[in-house]
Image (tube, rainbow, N blue to C red; front, side, top):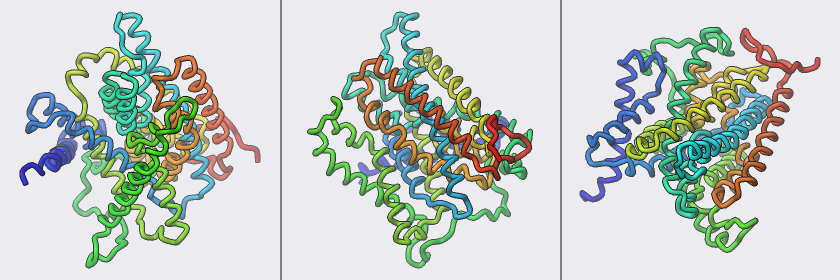
Length: 471
């Protein structure tokens, strides 16, 4: 049985880093003030142990698979989460439309900025790095580690873009760190100046330490199953497992059929490969949830419990992402990596907080959330949102679920058609299509700014809207 312990012990080492991060957050004032999440702290500690050789013989490559799968599981779990009846459907759809518009602009803009930065770096330094090592920053920042790994795998194996996987994972880790370095001070500013909608929000001792007080009675979710039969948590995990199996079997069935088909020179076998499991998994979960709601089975999923499953997957993903970084490659290419990350972060901040001022309701909440999503993942967006809205009373968390579905369709031509084969497309075509997509995204943002219901225009002490709705 000794040979069966490898993967299990690697996972045990991984989650131990979350425990270490929790302890450090609870006891180090600087980490509390900066509101650095335990998963990110644990990931940095794990990365340091790996780089120092004090990691029980494990290497960064042992944690790459965890990054991919828990990223995918977190988003699939989010799509299985149902809607809260107290939230207005039209309002949530409008907010989700605004978030998806910003995300769309960010996706294509980050890719173009990264591509240009590497091109300029090559011109000034005499290096010959592939410009696509800059373009993949969009999938590390705006999409997260799972997609950075998936796209890097395709680019590296199909198009010979060396180090695409490693650069993608480094960008994903940097995105998490920068989302908090920039996002936390801005979120604290919003709360300090009472610009958020939840006027009772406070950064109290529990929030700072990351540990609830002993007398806390916060619910962990409603019990769906009787404990004498099966635990409710594992029942929810079972539903997510079913979605994972269905996605796998779907791809195994379709991939051989698609391999013989080419559309616009793109082999459809690449689109239906397991490297894009994330995309197809989301579609499967959306269909599953719709079917469950149609037949009245939605009651078998408790939203709060499902959010805990999502949050747990996000925490594990963050730790695994940082621990997957190869120290030697990071130090060898630190200059171009820093140039790309800093440039993309500045552009993303200007985009999210600049266009966010057009929001007439929940402006600060949406701005800080979409910035977190565009620099890290939905998980980092939720963590930043909790600073302004600790109880998640605003509709923003629900908007994120709709947003993850909307972006599958509004960026389908980018994510499903162009990105998997991007290195095989000429740069002129990439610039034209990406810029056109950014323009469409901008108009989408403006339309959603105008669509906010009249009753929601005044929220908090400050108004962010430039556009006034007629009476």
